[in-house]
Image (cartoon, rainbow, N blue to C red; front, side, top):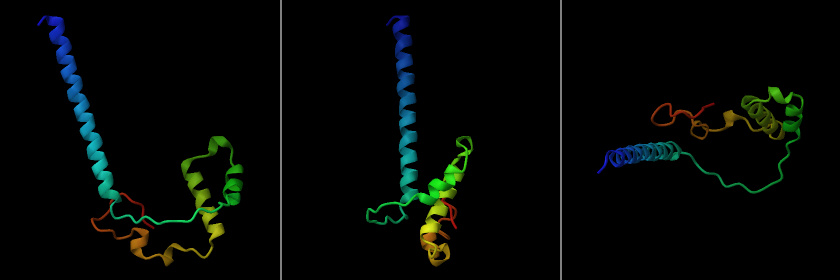
Length: 111
């Protein structure tokens, strides 16, 4: 093999090795995600019309440049509290809130 052909072969081999490494990282991340999500319960809900009046009013009061993820999440929480004032996190069991899960702190937020 000529020198340019050998160099191209080495570059192709390095590229394949790098691709393999990236694919293994993806597989590892997927396995970690599956381990993390395993204890979560899925709940079936019925489709219904959503009332976002309070949410829209809360965000309308802010300039677009000030809107952030925490602000949006806060507006959603306030919307839920407005529609369901009797729903209190303390009425949920520790397991339902994800508190004291097996294996310690797994990155999920707890109340």
